[in-house]
Image (tube, rainbow, N blue to C red):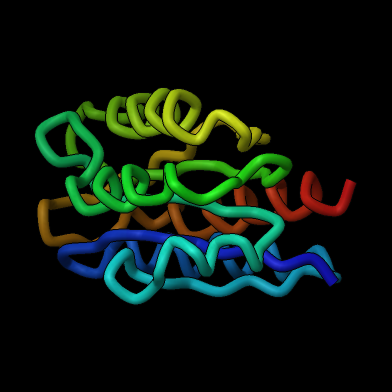
Length: 153
């Protein structure tokens, strides 16, 4: 059984809902056990127990959420060579993909031993506090299944 962790930050709960959908998709492929933790709920050393690590957070002024960036900074002291991962964000308006692209760049730069196995996923939030657009949960579930299949290769 492969193990995955989704480390996220969420202000209004929308990113948490996306993380849950990604978890569901990963587990649907079979032989994947996935956990979800806010950045404040996990120590970076715990990342060593997982085969895959996903990072996600809301788009804050076209940047990844500060707490996810701080967590990645702390994770640089842990040897994540050979781990796979992916990134996701939630956004409003026309900001699709902006924060997640920056998050992927930071992951590649700071966690260089980790391989990102899927293009970043962005989920539309209808308004600042939500809700998520109707199609985003199924899309997030499919994204999770994609990452889950990559984990099993």
